[in-house]
Image (cartoon, rainbow, N blue to C red; front, top):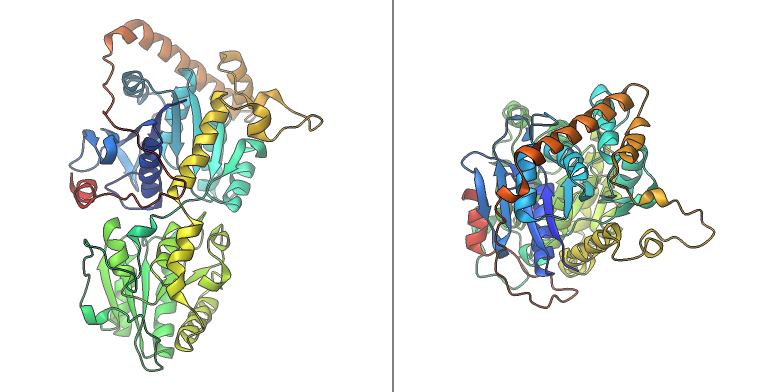
Length: 493
């Protein structure tokens, strides 16, 4: 059976990032498998209204006030009228929200359940339990996930974190990792692509041959320059690494509030000639930056998965990363050097990686083929498709949840749309919060009734689906990637 699916999140192109890439790649693969997929996100600068991307992927850029890091202002109800209009126009059956900090995602799941639609939520991040921001976020997440049909997490660590934060039944949470289009992240030793672009001088690119004791080793960092991405740790470690290894250079790509701190550190230590700052780079340029290096340094303080380290390994880089969150699950030990999220240990781990490359102990030329075998967006789409079938009843609950007689099956895992049943679930969210949540659901339901009466469905035109020819999708066919014109459209439509 084919479904009409709406992916909803505040985070999408032209903003670069792992969530944005995940939504795009998953959507295109689902379209290849015969599903209709649209994306609902907020308007970006110069991009409002409806846009079409590769393979007929339709994107709705809804004008909304953005308050922080591309997150929209939470309003709970004001998004409902236009969301309802889009859902009816596109005949949506499943609403799939992404990211805990996306207000569009949280509100869309609430409105979708009020409209009688099946819902899925994908969590891409880890959150704590002690600080005020995490407590508030966790309470809001519990509100949203109390009535969701299924939850997807990108790692097992992320699943444990989400289950604890939202008090979920673990059987209602699946683990489906991110992936990478390996053809887009080839090392230099592979057959060159016709659309390869050079970033920086040709002589700065590493040779596929063995690294000599006096050869320059380039360390690449591509990250948003925020506190949680370990920028402070990076600022402290760079001078010590460069002091210990005179034949080492850094290339840093990314932007954020910590960029000024990084630049000040370079000026204090007079390291401008050994550290190249590229600023923000588009996703299609990431590979061309990575292949200029030998080591990829990832000093993140918290990470649910870390797609960028998979991309780095696919480009043939040895990865030095902090042992936090879901990162230890991502790559095998021979591709990585782990460090504690501390300055001293990060410096030592980087030194070990440099020594391993100089002694030719690490065979990075094999990384690309190994990553290609491990991660496939086609596999991610197929596993996500199984979730859609499970919540829609196209496969039995016993098969979907792994229930067998005698294991204590609970029928409440199949979420009822009845208002009284929904209120029961929300009421258990807390002594005071539960009552507030119930009030919000009742108001949402009354608003829905009002919209149905005053703006009937018969007055909303049904959008025509993009004409497409469904091709056979091979299990390991993960070589489809945006054409050059599509990449340009993603960045500057």
